[in-house]
Length: 302
Picture 1 (tube, rainbow, N blue to C red):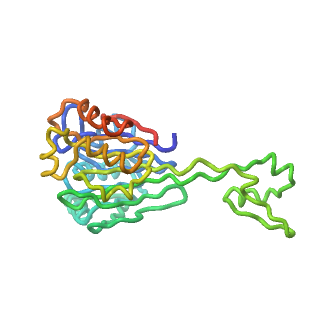
Picture 2: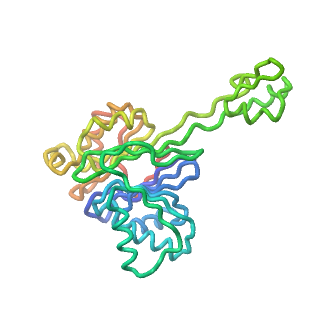
Picture 3: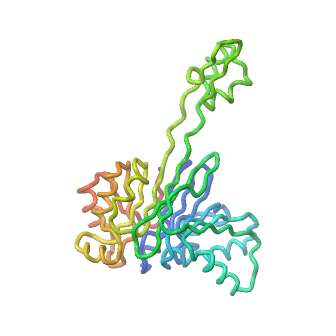
């Protein structure tokens, strides 16, 4: 599986014996991405087999402690383990100051560079792109500046129909160009890529919606994604509490998933008042049939 999401923490601000604060590890085309880093994330990474030094990119949704209190400790551990490769970190304005002030107070210099890129309030757009993946961000509706993220595994290169190419004496040096979808004209004859290749699987998308009150404004950014994570801190019994604290209920998360025509919804950030997510799941399923509540250690294929 080249695109997976591992739930490192599925709880909200108060950790419980079953749920750590929010953190997720995303593996996409050999790119290793950490989304949020609540307290205890390092222990969860150990527990669920995520290697610290493989992390390439860190995405911090907002500056409430249950989403970033574990980050400085993780950066220090990477240093102690001998990391030299630079690390990209994206998050709201203020994150750079927080990290540098805590690291400077420690009195030690890291062996590697931290490239912190801060996001201005309300920003939406691309954060990162290479030949394999894209990462974009969009604003959520919470008490502080908060961002959602979409990770896209780009469409894989087309597969060459080699037997046909050999039969028709297509030159080997054209194979790579045909696989990229390029038509080739030779001696006035057009060699069409579509005749000698089979399209690869379509691009897959994962969307992460951290703390947010119900807001249909996010739908254009998450439309038709293969997997959507949406916070569901409360059940409908506490819908007024959800509204006053700028959080969502399971029904609201399911409504967003339905309106956005996503393939699958997973929900987390459950309040510590709940022993399990059974009621969340029941309420969501009445609105959107492919819904589930995450647990620490769950792994999902996108």
